[in-house]
Length: 111
Image (cartoon, rainbow, N blue to C red; front, side, top):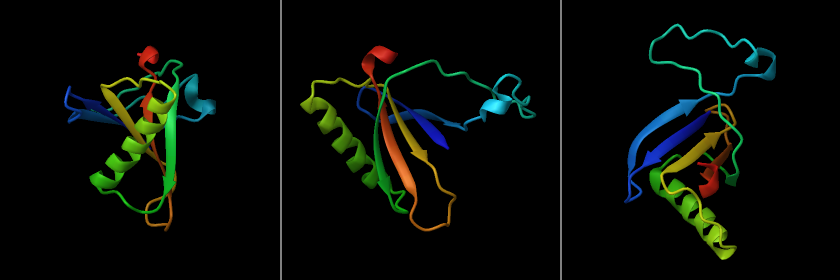
């Protein structure tokens, strides 16, 4: 599951989207959504900076700490991420103990 968070000028969340990867077998002819709130979106190529971490923590302050660490690492090498979007991802089934989670920032030139 990938969540895209759209941010205002103060880095407050204005809205969000949840996304799921469609396996390559189905990408040519993906299933048609049966709910009007669901749509298919094709993502173009982009440069994404990622910080992976484990555990079961979902609290916003912990995610904020991870985003801050990623932002500081990028600043050290003069990389400016796109300021209007952040991305979170989880790759392990809920309830299965330690999980892999990630925070991501897009390269400013990718937008």
